[in-house]
Image 1 (cartoon, rainbow, N blue to C red):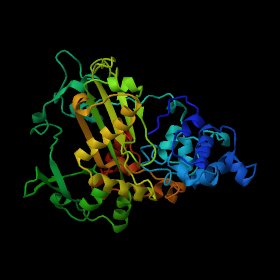
Image 2 (tube, rainbow, N blue to C red):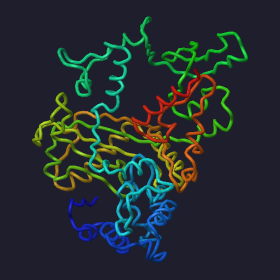
Image 3 (cartoon, rainbow, N blue to C red):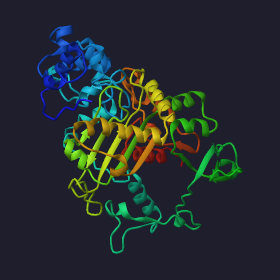
Length: 458
C-alpha cells in the first residue's frame, strides 16, 4: 500500500503506485486540472449551465472520466470505492452530476453554478445548499440510539434516567440508564413492546360497508421472543414503520402495483465498526491517522484514529498522548464495484457480507493496519494493542436513493417516483420510514412518520 501525505504533489505520489503511466496521467488530470472544460472540448463551446448538467446527469462518473477526461479503465480504480456512502455504489453506477454536486474531482473547469438541475439526487442537492459546506455532522457515540431514548422518554416519562442531579438532554443521555420495565405497563398512554415480530397486518374494513366496529379495526399478528403461537392486537389506526420490502410482504390486500413499488427499494449494505486501542503509539510512529485504500485489495473503505475526541461534557476526552487509549473507527460500504445498476451493486455487496464471519472482519481490520501502519514504521501488535472490537453489520442498511442514470422517474413529477407511489395508505394503515422518501437520514424518517400520521383516515 502506498500512502499519500496530505498536500503531497499528485505526480510525485502516483509515481510510487502500480498504476500504468496512462492511468497516472489521467488521475493527475482529474485531481489537479481546475481550468479545462471537458464538456466543451467534446461538444463545443456555448453550452449553458443546465445543458452541461443534463449531460452529467445521464452519465456515470466512470463514463465521464473515461469518455470526457480520457482516463483508461485502470484509473477508475482510484475512484471506485470512495464515492458518497449514502449512494452506496462505485463510480460505475453513480451519476456524474451527483458526484459533481458532492465535490468529487474532475469538474472544476466546467464552470457550473450551484443551482440544482433535473435528475439531481436528494443527497447531492442537499450538498449544494450554502449552509452544507460549513455545517458539522455531529454523531452520538452510540449512533441514533440516544435520539430514540430521548423520544421514548418524552412518550413514557421516567423511562430514561441520567446521572443523579443531571438533566436529561442530548449530552447526558449518552450515559443515561433505560428502565425497560416501564415501557409496556398497563395504564401508560404509550406502550412499547420489544422483541415482538409482526408477521401479518390486516387492514380494517370500510366503515361504510360494515356496521360492526370490530371489522373496522386493523388486526396485527406478532410473535414475542420467537414463540410458536402468535398474538393479536386490534387497532383503529396502524403505521407501518418497517422497511418497504417488509411492508410489501406483511401488509395484506395491497394492490400488485403497490407491492412492486414497495419492493423496488433496496437497502445499501454497510458496516460501522469501532476498535478500542490500549495505546496508539504505532500510529504516532508511522505518522498515520487515517487509511482510505483504493482498488479492491483491502476490505475496509476507511480506518480512522480518534485520539482526543470528546462528545459534549459527558463523554471523553480521550487523552491525546500516544501511550494512552484511543479509538479506531472503520467503515465499509461493501457493494460490488463492477455491477450496474446501483441495485445490483447493493446485492453483490450484501452477498459478500453474508459470507463473512466476525473473524473475517477482524482479520480484515488487522490487515489494513499491518499494510499501512506497520509498513510505515509502526509496531502494531493486535494481541498487545487491541483491547476490544465492536462491529455493527447491516446487510440491509441505508435507504436506497434514486440515481438519474438508472431511475428516469427522477426527471418527472415527485408523485410518480416508486417510493411515493408505494407509500399510499391502505384503509386505516399508512406507511412510513425513510424508504418512503428514498432518503437515508434521521430527519427524513421523522418527516415520513409525521406524514404517515396525517395520511390516516379521520
